[in-house]
Length: 233
Ligand SMILES: C[S@@+](CC[C@H](N)C(=O)[O-])C[C@H]1O[C@@H](n2cnc3c(N)ncnc32)[C@H](O)[C@@H]1O
Image 1: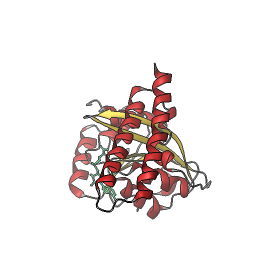
Image 2 (image 1 turned 45 degrees about the horizontal axis):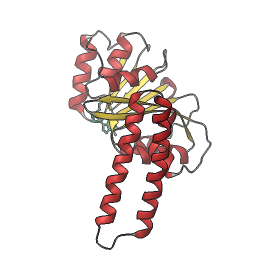
Image 3 (image 1 turned 45 degrees about the vertical axis):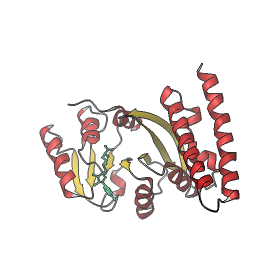
């Protein structure tokens, strides 16, 4: 079985051993096939909204002799999945807004379930949504693959709703996460905000309030990054 890239490998490490796992947006099926083949999980569901990727996953699972343990489902998000038959839900490699849509539609607010989320975009909005909706972010990991640094969030529903500030939305738990990749993640988030600030400053009729807020956030980010760099050296 082909080795997973660092991003998928990091997600695989965050799945609970023994958890019946649903891989939403499975595409090629590498992750769920690896988890089942390595007997990390007893089985689960490979799901995708599009038939073509799902056929790739089905082919891989068939080739590995895993079709009896991993069911292949053409579905949007979590719809049609047996809620009682899933412990861990992986949603990886899609936009944070799509993840918010999937979680909202499903309403699977069961404290014992774990949601492993790896957004390609809008990670800040996803963190904000999770906090506001009563999901606790239990853990974050950063993984580097193909020149990008990705955040992977592990969340559970607790019912405790709160309003995170912009710094938490941007960085999440990454400041406390060990490893070079988590520092890289913070630096990339800072670069993204810095680019937005440049855009705000260049805009016709610049918005002084938003510029001030962005500068304040940048200063707070710098303080966190300096502290993390200091503790790493
Ligand atoms: C870029 S691939 C990511 C594949 C894999 N999860 C990974 O991280 O490498 C995104 C996949 O999500 C699927 N997808 C997008 N929206 C979806 C939804 N609402 N429900 C299920 N699958 C979806 C797409 O069809 C596509 O196959």
